[in-house]
Length: 486
Image (cartoon, rainbow, N blue to C red):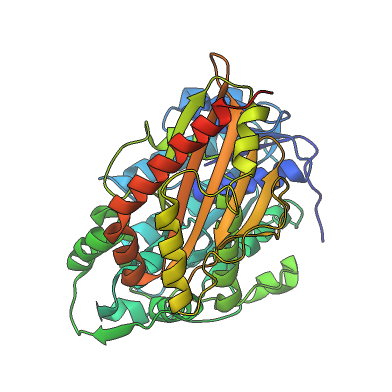
């Protein structure tokens, strides 16, 4: 490939967004020197690597941009608006400010992520704005590599979350025409590959590339494939007329999207968004994933990201452990998390955690645990009969009554996956860490990934019993830990 990776620092805008946040992680892993331009540095600073700079700036404040661009070789422009009024005007102003600052700073290139669209067709305001931003950046005279993408599929992406919410919550869907509009979704991992390689290709002439995944499908196709992989049966009943406004209200009721954001999204996907110019495949050398692979990877990555979560951080970011019926909702998971502080060192507290189950029992309401295991046996499950391999030691892969040990971090963390017959998947996790005033804090977190309405009905239906058992178990753990010495 012609061109070379800039030796100078890379400026990343949109680092707090979905694509930008993932790109930041990959750039750091590849050893790039990165500077992030954000309006609130304090929100991003805890999440960046030691070599990454975070500077305060606003694309709508032209005076804040020259210091951020000083010493920069290349810049990623990953900022656009969906919510709020006058988003086209704001996008135009932000792009104009950035283009002027980039020209003065003599940037070597700008990499811009735009939207895939057929310019010969009527465009939604959102897509029209995305194309206009690319044109404004090119007029700066700085070489621009513009990537135009359709639906982005990945754990946490707006489109994936919309598909998930619709399929999980609606066994029968009345679907408007736009769900059958052709599109060419791209896995977020493939999009990141394109963005990284855009630093290396020849940028002369400010090329525009259309990028997509291996398959052409539609939102209806995405919903069917998601349902297949989740083992859910779903029926779609098409209707001839459902305006973007009415559709957005429908989305606002059943998905995490705000109605206004949903309306702009729907307006953008009423026209086909498929790759018509295949030059990107030859220039970038990316072999994109299929829709099936992209959805499977999104589900796996979500499991991995949640498995790596420190629940104390996740809970605090969502607020101060709100005691609402059903617990918290983090992504697609339903979570009941509670903590207690004990006046013993963390090592002694964890000893009580790692003895749980088997002959020790579950520290509270053992009769209820036995009854739940008996019910599981009646439907062909594992029940409580397996016990545990060793009364003191646990290792990943061990059976622990009806649980399977997924992870053990000595003196700190134990994560169990349920092997009961359930309408979904369940985990139980214990974390132990030093308490600020001395002693140790034990956090106990039960999380559930519901499979459709049956899973939601199960979780909310027996939640009062869960509260009784989980509260008693944590209190029993605290008593057992307090009886031990380091």
